[in-house]
Length: 311
View 1 (cartoon, rainbow, N blue to C red):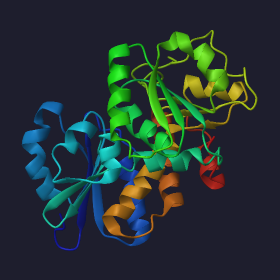
View 2 (view 1 turned 180 degrees about the vertical axis):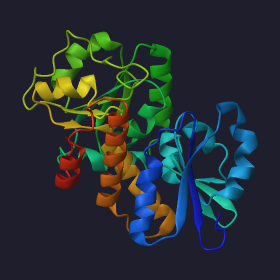
View 3 (view 1 turned 90 degrees about the vertical axis):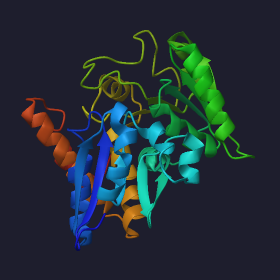
View 4 (view 1 turned 135 degrees about the vertical axis):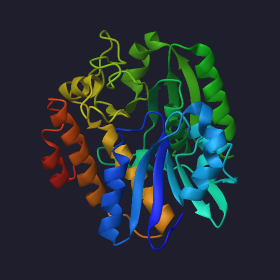
């Protein structure tokens, strides 16, 4: 909450120590002339419910990251339509003493995708049957896309597709279905406009891994499908490197983080988000991390920040 004239915000999750959101949001508050602090707060899965009341007293706004996006939907006083459709909350706004759960992930994803593709997506393939798929699949379906979910766990895939389909507004033009395991990708991808990685394959816990089997081609169709990896550390995952080499337009996960964060900022403050300032801060934070790790993933962050292009 606000103590004096300083406003207090946080991102909660586990793990959360290396989140890019604090430097990104702090840069946004400073650019907007708002006195606020924004911190990363580790909250374990088992302590979320008992800590929820204290968290609400301390902070007037929250971002929520894994593994809490579904759990927080059951803890807020009201779930906004944006969050009800996906069944997840990534932003909490205080309305007096009541908490409102919002999801800016879907809009953030679509905004980031528009950096490389402005035309509607007719057919999208999403890799993964976990929580990261929810907001993306719901957002695409609401724009009219045929969304096909691919994952090894058929039971989880069927349940996820059925739940999301039941949440879509009546009259929606798009569809969501579980298509099968990775063996179906050779058939699906030549017909797809978009491939999204919503698995952890390629993140720091699985470095060098790719969710796309080696025998599945990304250059079997023309035009090439856009490829979007939700992972943002490293910026260029093995999947994105392979997609770029095949001539596919690619979108890094950091772009979704920036765009969803901008929409969270606007919900909290009512002010227009300084998106380019947030982008520069996010890229700089990743570049610093890469330098600390002795890696080169963020070597061209300054150029990307200046051009505003998703590299």
